[in-house]
Picture 1 (cartoon, helix red, strand yellow):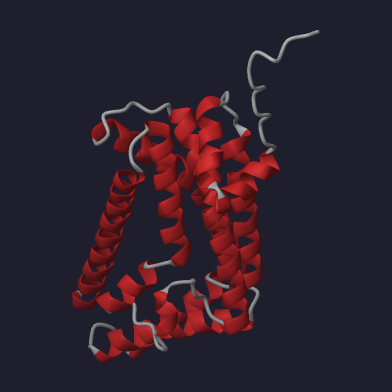
Picture 2: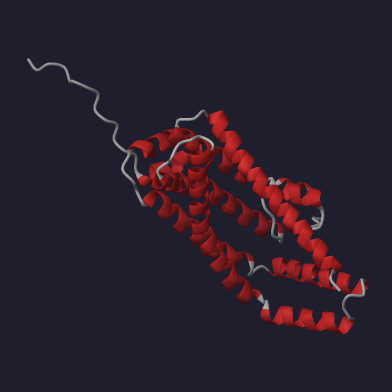
Length: 259
């Protein structure tokens, strides 16, 4: 009679579609598999391509909405009006610039520039977060992570941002203005010069979710506690948001004070 099996057979790897979906519900299991499996380019390339495709689609759909185009023109007109009221620009100059903006910044131009920006951002985001995870592991956790593994984690985690982009598109089309799923939805009249408004806009629900999933990936790749990984990724993200808000306020102040 044959004896019992010598060991438990290895768990078969999940499919790419399974990994793309499981990262929403069980990211720890996905990243555990990533850590031990051979490198797979599809883990980061496919999410980046999906994000780029959705970004191009979003640019075409949103900038074909008359209400959104009207909102953008009204925001530009308000900026020119403020400059005229402050005596930094004559009415004739404001009218000339506004006419040129409407001529060369029409829907077609916005679609093209938005599409190019979406493609670049989709790939840059994956490589950026992979570098951040690698750097956090090296500096704070004293662990040299495999960059390709970090790239796979960042790519699969970007599926969270992909879902956020879908919600953003649906909200913008339904409300007739460009909005994001953040606490800024609680503000009836968003003011880009208001620090509180900028801070609320930075608190994007899907960005927070993404940071949490990236923390899971950092924890599984490095072997560190999740709480420590969350402090590192969350602290880095908050620092970047603070610097971006500070830069926005500084640019607004310089622009307002320009003669």
